[in-house]
Length: 260
Image 1 (cartoon, rainbow, N blue to C red):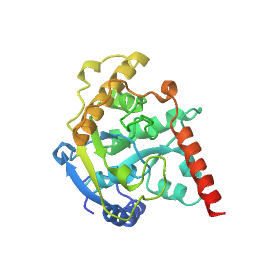
Image 2 (cartoon, helix red, strand yellow):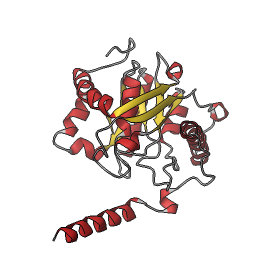
Image 3 (spheres, helix red, strand yellow):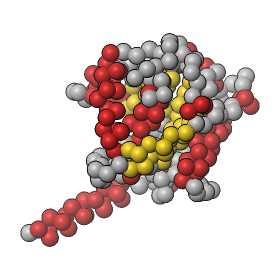
Image 4 (cartoon, rainbow, N blue to C red):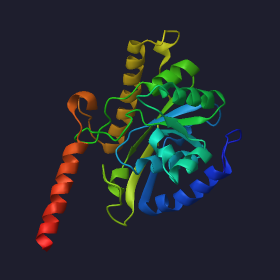
C-alpha cells in the first residue's frame, strides 16, 4: 500500500491494514467515487455517516487504498481492551474521553495531527445512527471545532451499503456473499461564513449542521432518495437500540422454546 509523501505510517499501522483489507475486499463489491476530492497533502478532516459496525472498515479502506492513512477518533473504552487497545495505540489512533474531565484531550491530539498534515477520520454522529431509516442523525460539534480552529478542510465521505454486510446493531456478517458498498468523497464543506467568528456554542452548532447537511446530501445521492425533513436527535427522539435488543432477546427465547 503506497501513501502520499509526508503521511506518518507506523509498522503497526501497515500490519493492521494488511490484516483487515483482505476480509473487507472479500465481503464488498466496491463502488468508489470522488477520489479527486481527497487532498494529496496537508491536514484534513474526513467525516462519514455511521450505520453499522462494519463501515469504519469501508471508510478506512477507501482512504488507505487512495494513499491516505487515517487517524480515527475512537471511544476510549476500546483502548482499554486487552488486544484491541494496544493495537489502536500502536497505530496512533486517538481516544475520545466523552463526558469526562479528559474530554478535551482527544481534540488536542486531533488538532496536533491535523496541524502536522495528517488526516483525522470522524463519525460526527458519535455512534450508529438511530434514525428509523438509517439516515444520518444530529452530529456532535467536534469536527466543526477542529475545522474552525485549524483551518483545515472538511471532506464528507458518504457511504451506503456496509449495513448489507453487517446489519445495524449486529456484530456478524449477514451472509458470505459480496455486497455492494458505495463510498463517495465530496468537495470540501464551505465553512467560510464562520471564519474569524468566536467558537461559541451557536457557531459550532450551525457549522455542525452545515457539515451534516452536506454529508446527508451525499448519502441521499448514493441512495437515490430524498432524506427526511426531520433530523433524528437521539437525545430527544430516543434510542432505537433498546427496542432492537428487546426484540432480539424475544426472538432468541422463541427459538429456544421451539427447540424444546
